[in-house]
Image 1 (cartoon, rainbow, N blue to C red):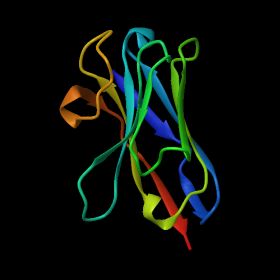
Image 2: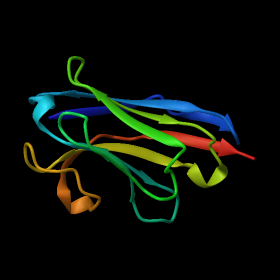
Image 3: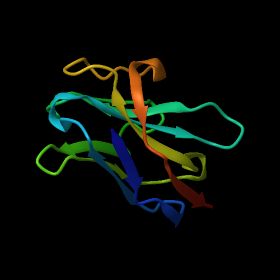
Length: 125
């Protein structure tokens, strides 16, 4: 299993970025996926999740209405569209695969078995 997050960068507050997570080494379309982030000195936290077919999504309250998670099973890729970014969104963003196929994508880190390396997002005020 390989998960490669990309698309991070530096933006000013109010800006937008779209992250991608390219998956390989397994049947992407039968696993839920999630995005997490970790800011310096803080624990890794849930950002958003999507179930295996893309029909069910969930968001942390802090990003609801600003971020949109999606997936393209034909391309084995998951996305995170981020808008209205603020400095509190600064973190390393990780994509992760749910622990079992078809299983719902919950918020707990323990529900995810495989993690990508992460991509840095820096938002300046």
